Image 1 (tube, rainbow, N blue to C red):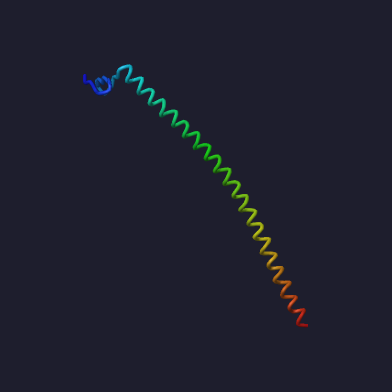
Image 2 (cartoon, rainbow, N blue to C red):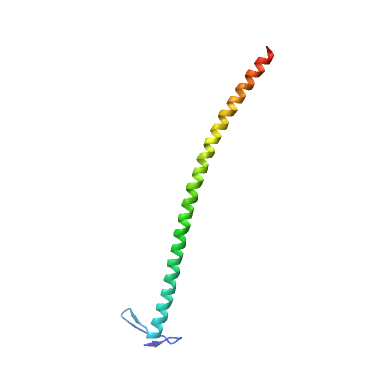
Length: 93
C-alpha cells in the first residue's frame, strides 16, 4: 500500500485500483463536469451543423437564381446584339 499526495490512498491489487471515498468523490465530480462540458459541446456542434445546412440550402437557392439571371442576361445580350446589327444594316440602305 502506498500513500500519494492530496490524501489519496491507492492500493493496486491485480490491476484493480482502490481509492478513498473523498478521492473517489473528487474523481466522480471531475468526470461529471467533463461529461457536462462534452454534452454542451455536442449540442453546440449540432446547432452549428443545422445553421450550416440552412446556409448551404439558402446559398444554393441564390446560386440557382443567379444562374437563371445569367442565362436571361445572355439571351438579352444576344437579342441586343442582333437588333444592333439589323439597325446598322438598315441605316446603310
